[in-house]
Amino acid sequence: MNDQKLTATIDRILLPDREAIEAAERHLNNLTKPPGSLGKLEDIARQAAGITGELTPDLSTRAVIVMAGDHGVCEEGVSAFPSEVTPQMVYNFLSGGAAVNVLARQANADVFCVDVGVNADLSHSKLLGRKVRYGTANMTRESAMKKEEAVAAIIAGIDTVEELYNQGYRMFATGEMGIGNTTASAALCAVLANMPIEEAVGLGTGIDEARRQHKINVVNRAIDRNRPDSADAIDTLAKVGGLEIAGLVGVILGAAALRCPVIVDGFISSAAALVASKITPRSVPYMLGSHLSHEQGHGQLLQAVGLSPIIHMDMRLGEGTGAVLCFHFVDAALLIMREMATFESAGVSQG
Image 1 (cartoon, one colour):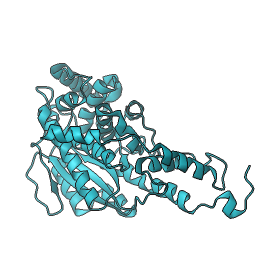
Image 2 (cartoon, helix red, strand yellow; image 1 turned 180 degrees about the vertical axis):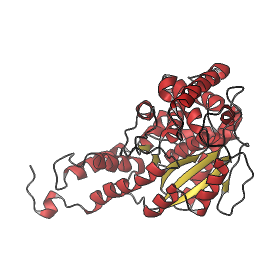
Image 3 (spheres, one colour; image 1 turned 120 degrees about the horizontal axis):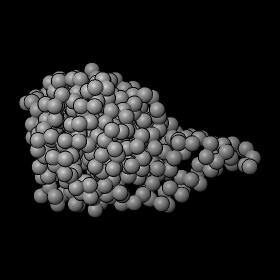
């Protein structure tokens, strides 16, 4: 059943609307400015038109989807924080006290936290409970999860987007919480982007160089133990990935199938974007790369997906914080399309 839904979702992802992109280009070139002078804002305007098929889509109702899951590889001492922080931070999201909540309020966005794999029993009226299992296994000893569990977590993301779409949400941002998830993301980069492990592994939540070298060794051991198939993104995701990463893969695919923009956050979210791009390259035009994380390897990862970051703020928090900031740039691009005068309406001579 899950396999059928995943296939059906992938089949619904269409190429962007070329006529809408061309119409946006004509409109941008008729505004009172030199062609292309608003740079990435013009790129965003064209992309939004291609995604939605509308010249000036209404994307004012938007959601940040924070997927949460734990990682068995934390047993190897790869993080500066203990695994208990994952459920503690989930409650922080739900009470509105995390950085992503603050920035989402500024951007008039709603935050939804999804338990797809937290290693604890959570209860809260605002929590979206879609738990597939209680955290992944230690990937240095066995596969992080079964392939059917990875697919189930992807479906959890698709279901979440569809549910929110039916409530009127039309733009999404990816967020995550899971102690140890930079380790899993680095492993995905190494396998699916053919990135040297030494370049893929960064300092995560703030470990020192000695711990980073240990983390490199852990990722090596996990890949050697599981031998993920680089030609099979879901096999790789199951063997060395994470449940919340899989959930974000579903968010991206689900948004693309519904012709909604999805703003990709930092290193972990970009690892999910990499997996989604390998499942179907047609998903990439629906993604916007938000920022260049301070995490080592993120630039190479974005290039592997085919994304260009909108901002560079030296951030490395995750949660969806960088993605939420970029809601403002999408708003700016659409306001330019709606409100800026044309040469004809302003009575300005066109060069």
